[in-house]
Length: 50
Image 1 (cartoon, rainbow, N blue to C red):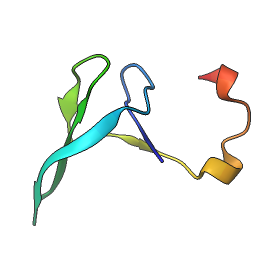
Image 2 (image 1 turned 90 degrees about the vertical axis):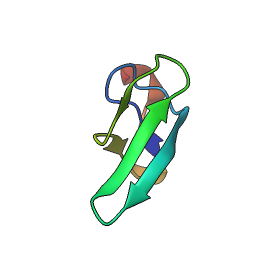
Image 3 (image 1 turned 60 degrees about the vertical axis):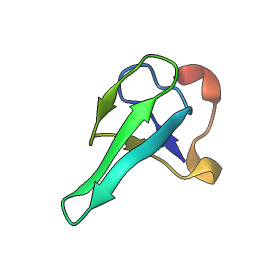
Image 4 (image 1 turned 90 degrees about the horizontal axis):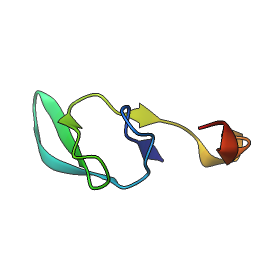
């Protein structure tokens, strides 16, 4: 599962990609960049800490 590094939203999606990597955009806050938070849903624990 991917999350936005700015607002921690799950509503982040790839907009471009290739050899150099992916660019992502957040629907909630408008963040755009290559840095995203990735975690395993089983190990994420309590959602309230975000």
